[in-house]
Image 1 (cartoon, rainbow, N blue to C red):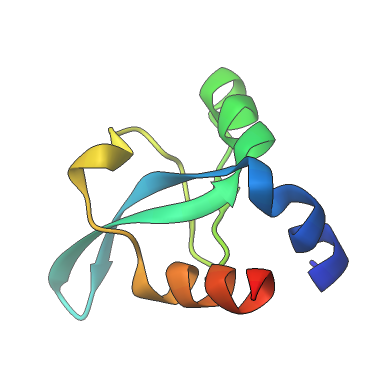
Image 2: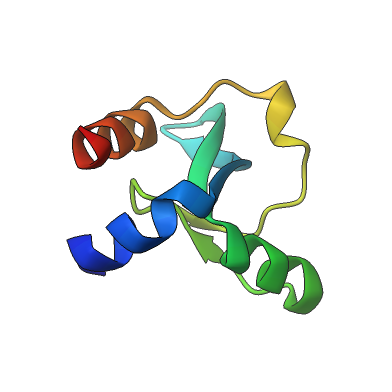
Length: 80
């Protein structure tokens, strides 16, 4: 993905949780993802790609998780 794509869709981004295993520890974060991709995933079950590059199928309430620090940093750099 290019920066142009991110700049176009970031205002419509939202967070979704990531349930992953990393080094044996369970990490839970809400990631920034293109909003239309969240809708598409909900309908098709297809995985989404967060700003940080994490790929997963969202299935939990993102408000229950802290925001991914990498997604947040990328978002802030792109908007600033």
